[in-house]
Length: 59
Image (cartoon, rainbow, N blue to C red; front, side, top):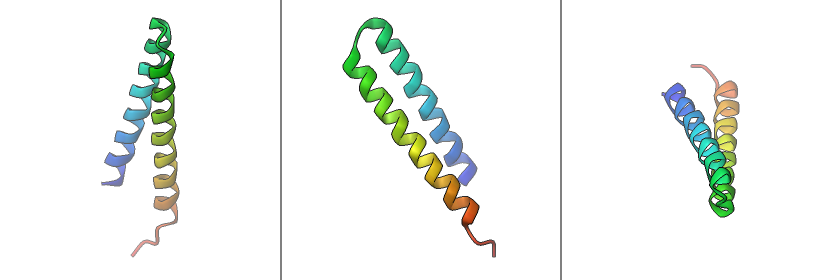
């Protein structure tokens, strides 16, 4: 389950980074900024999930 969530978060990071690049090419800086912001949010969530999974006690 955690691996699926992790893969989904990485996919969102990549999608938002591609969206940011395309927005910069088109000259739409506000969309590029929000795409970068959402990409960073997803990356932070992935990092927190990864740290939680590493320190989760195994039953």
